Length: 484
Image (tube, rainbow, N blue to C red):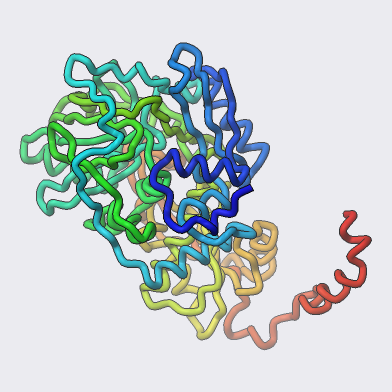
């Protein structure tokens, strides 16, 4: 089994990443699964059975499609594959990856992409009337979905018409026909803001949709970066090298030179089609069915034997929810510290909350009001603001990834009247199943499960062995304990 710490450079593309992941025992190959419900259900079963360490799934020999056409589920959905993707040391657990992310952000500097003349994505180009996206094994994921979704683990690439920067976001893309794809973008998302700028000018909105790519870019596309920072630049900084991009034929938009499949087209003002419903990361068919803009496809670029990447949002755990937890936790930690707060010992976004709705921040209290400041920052920073619900602040003796410890701290250190605050009119969206249809805000509960700062010295001591005693006794009786 290969040790990826021996690699002297980042992986070149999705295919090289898969080779490395398979060498590390992190890929499960499944042959013969149908695109119609079988691949989505298998992804659900595998990730429920192996929570937090499920393998990536490479679906091969999909009935009705050429043997080389594959689907990939859960590319980054384990601590090991996340570390492999980002070039971190082999982790013992998720907090190792979160800490490595936070430490890198202390010295992170964006690196813009490099424009090259050609790349593997140009191996095949279908133009205009040649376009037929059903040549790819587009999955039908959930029983009540409104159709097949080619874009779930996708990159929607757009250029801001006013500020001239490239944004990459992950938005669900529904196949309407062989040359029409609907895009659903939540209110407030950067891609939606950019699209509306074109529409207000009465212009069509050019767009690329990458449907198979380096998983590093998916990690960025599915999270909130500050407006104006391109995901290419951000992840180039993580990679330590610029991404190679080629310019698309019609609109000159930069697409990853080694992507597997890229769609190019335009969205037009006042042109919509019925989109949805779709099973979402909250665990519901949230958002319903609605009229949404669609892309008129002008080009489809694809490699020989392309690999279509997919995510299966559903009741957690899913094939991407764990990786989202790790990335989101690292981003919140970085933003909170950049805002000036010290004493943060850990952050974790729990999978049961869809990596957004139940977030825990651990601090070493240094002054009165420290916990309140930490909770407010974690709830309102860019990475923690969208579709949140609960933020819990705990002391540094609590492991934020351990839900049992977190609930124990809530039960013993939080007085509901004194230690729970409610923040109203916060950023949510149609995927929130709890809010009325047509609204876009919700509320947040900030739960302070810390020893009150004024009582720290007098608070009852915890009834458990010290780490030193546990280690000594465990070593003495190792032969017995190892059998447990």
